[in-house]
Image (cartoon, rainbow, N blue to C red; front, top):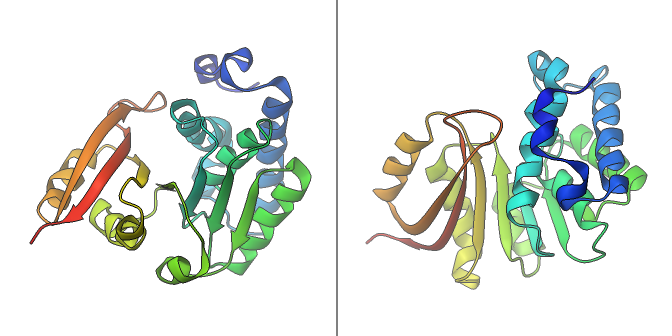
Length: 212
């Protein structure tokens, strides 16, 4: 039985039953591959559905529009691959999954094949993604790096697209990260409280620019 937290995401609210089943398949594949590869922290495996799938699903709940995304440091695919699975029912939008670890990249490709997710995998470093990817509308990342570092990666894309959206899952210490980032960057910020963990948030950042 899945966590009671699933009640925050009733199937009929914003994704189809078919998409819900694809997310369950994704969870099953993650557990299967985890036995051979360290895709996620072992201590989070028992709570995979809530800690990873539903936590990532919050992004699509907030921004369901068929955008072209870059998911930085995708790892096992959270949140980017969850977004890509959800976009499949729209038949529009795309997610570029940037993951330099080749074993994790192989896992991502397998999930894409089995779920028909609207995504492609790029086994490259984030620093080289700008020269590889085309135009993108939004960037996502989860549990990857401090906010200042993430904004530095995003800046290359923001210079080409001033309306770039940046969506970042952040933990309990995110207010301190925001304060530190504002010493170096200017940006508009909307904080969306997490449904999964009190005190955590999904940060929506726009109008990124460097301070002089």
